[in-house]
Every structure is written in C-alpha cells, then in structure tokens.
Image 1 (cartoon, rainbow, N blue to C red):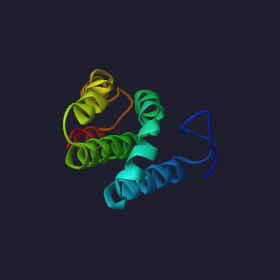
Image 2: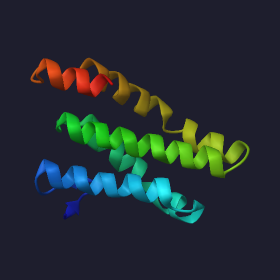
Image 3: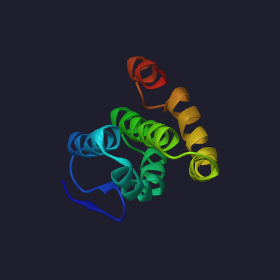
Image 4: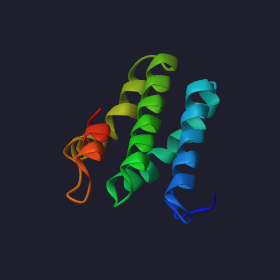
Length: 116
C-alpha cells in the first residue's frame, strides 16, 4: 500500500485499513522504541480519521490511537507520558464524537458499528 502526504490512501479503502491495522499490531506488540517511532503518525492518523473515509477505516484509525495511548501510558511513567497523550486529546475526542454520530451517507448498520 502506497501512502502519500502522511496517511492519505492512494489505493483502496481495504488496503488502507490493512495498513492502519499493521500500525495497530506494531503498537500492540512492539517495544517502547517502536511506540515512540510510530507516535509521529498520530497527527496524520487524526487527519485521516477526520476526513471522508469509510467507517471501517475510521475505526481502524481509532484503534491505532487507543493502542498508541495505551502503550505510552503503560510504558512511560510520569509527566512525559501525560503530556504526550494530552497534546492530541482534543482532536481525537472530536473524532470519536463524530465517529459515534456517523455520517449522513452511512447506513444504520454502519452507524452502529462505528459507535461500538
């Protein structure tokens, strides 16, 4: 999967979802160095989740964010971890709220899947 300009997919939605799911796996299974190196993807992931993409891709981006926050908070002690998470939290909370609301073009089943 080729990604340009951060994480904007240049291929199908399914390939973009697979790419983001790989990021989730690395965050879940990697050590602190891997988590730190992938932390720079939080801003592009936030841009992606905030754009007009499929509900499945949005859910994958949210899983990547949750995995990143979980890894940071369990691996890094003290104020550094808190600052790393807090700096991006407002944008992510807005993205979570929009994901729960859904998009007018989404079917009722897509809205339910996105909220849960």
